[in-house]
Image 1 (cartoon, helix red, strand yellow):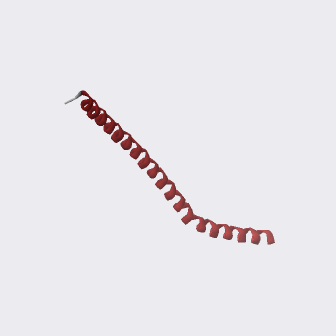
Image 2 (tube, helix red, strand yellow; image 1 turned 60 degrees about the vertical axis):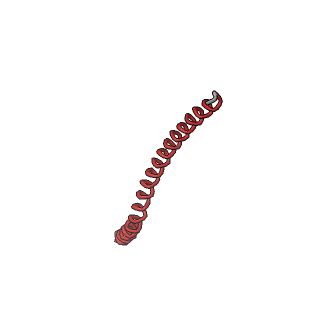
Image 3 (tube, one colour; image 1 turned 135 degrees about the horizontal axis):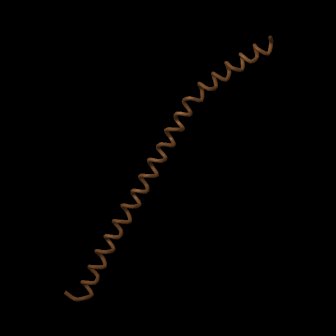
Length: 71
């Protein structure tokens, strides 16, 4: 086998290893970001579910304050 072919095979193998390693790291970062965004969405959903309850409680408090002001 000629030296040029051997060098080309070694270079190809090293390049393939580098690409696989870089892709696995990029995938890990992407998965981490997805987990973080999922947590943020869960927090937001919890807030969106609780907000109507807070609005009802606020309306009740406003009514109570109005009653107290009339006294």
